[in-house]
Length: 165
Image 1 (cartoon, rainbow, N blue to C red):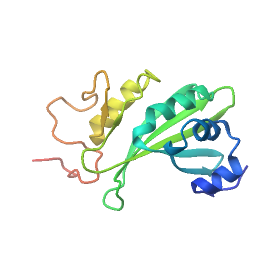
Image 2 (tube, one colour):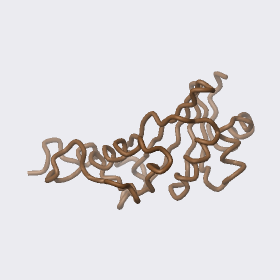
Image 3 (tube, helix red, strand yellow):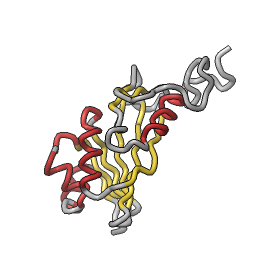
Image 4 (spheres, helix red, strand yellow):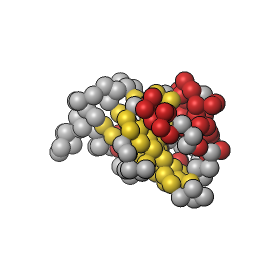
């Protein structure tokens, strides 16, 4: 399908039988805040409180591999300020899906998905280190790239170009 669909209702009407959508809508419709189908890839916006359950549902729907966890700082344009994106792959279906969670700029935090995919450990540590997003329940949430005594989070848009002095 080469159509671009935006909005939860449009995507549900056209792609309702998609296994990822079906898993979410059947088990926890309140978790799905938005859905987009663009460039042959589904993006599902998940309520932050439901990310662990949504990840489990995706795993049960056949998305067996966590490719990446990353973040975007939309400052100063948007609030919620941060977007955390989880890129999942189904080897059987040969397709990718993206889960995204939108977080407030003030004390951004979301539950860890390391219980669902242990490989999220280092990805979440990297997002914490560079963006300052906390992953609640993470087994070892500490800096991974920057020195332990570093001040701030260098990929935030309000971080000074030359660092803090």
